[in-house]
Image (cartoon, rainbow, N blue to C red; front, side):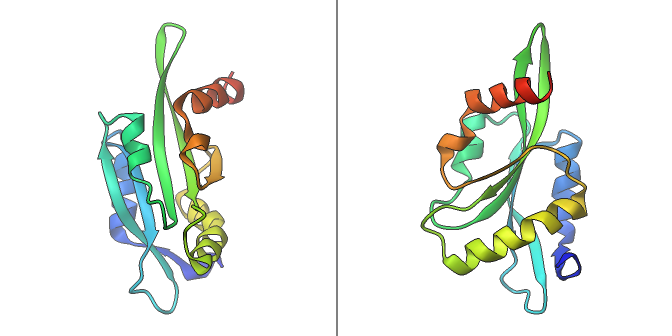
Length: 141
């Protein structure tokens, strides 16, 4: 499947901008105009000064997305930033979309070389700020 998953130039540029700290979050979606392979394109971006709540506001209630974002929190006397990859699969999305997004998630992460924690969810409760901070403290202690 790795060879049939492509990343658009816009998606690549947005990902690199997020890595440099120019964005706080990027949502990606499947490009519906692609017929012979799965192309992943940028859906929306958030500036680096956006809040965690604004990340959650990007997520549609009835369609799937990939979300890559930086979580910022305090640890001791210093600021920390950790990245997360989310496969957003809400219950009201089309079954075919759920299947295609789920089967393309690993190749998508591989193309960008993502080694961050991954979360698959369809509810914003799983992306609660305090829960994510607790996960960071447990994972990166």
